[in-house]
Amino acid sequence: MLRAPRGLAGAAFLKLAFAARIMAREPTVLLPELRSLLASGRAQLIDVRSREEAAAGTIPGALNIPVSELETALQMEPAAFKALYSTEKPKLEDENLIFFCQRGKRGFQATQLALGLGYKGARNYKGAYSEWFQKED
Image 1 (cartoon, helix red, strand yellow):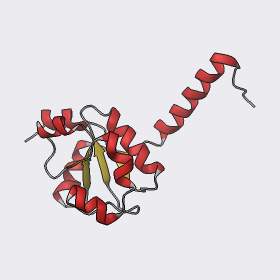
Image 2: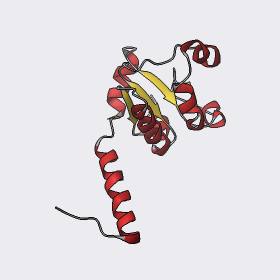
Image 3: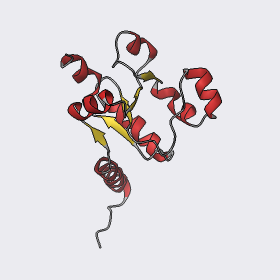
Image 4: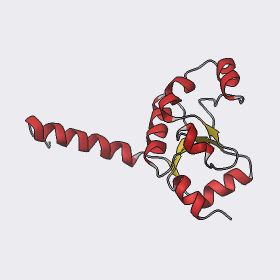
């Protein structure tokens, strides 16, 4: 059995091993699939950028919940969520709950958070808004 080194090297090894495990499980969606899901109405899209970033432009139909508010929002009672965000709260079993940000890091963090809270269909749009904006038709 492989043993982790001790001390600082051991801590770095464990962080790397943990990150590798999370990355291996990262459920993602790429642009062609995202377009198909949006066209068919089978995706719930959440923009986790700041309100200022989202106000400057977002993917049509996306709900803006800044990543700093996401954990609280996903744990709200459905009525409180609807009152605050004017839409139904995602259900734990919903498929294609897709998070995105500007470049991918916050979208990844949001996806991991949602998965940790039990949202089985949480996915990250890996291309993020920057790709959407570049390839917008």
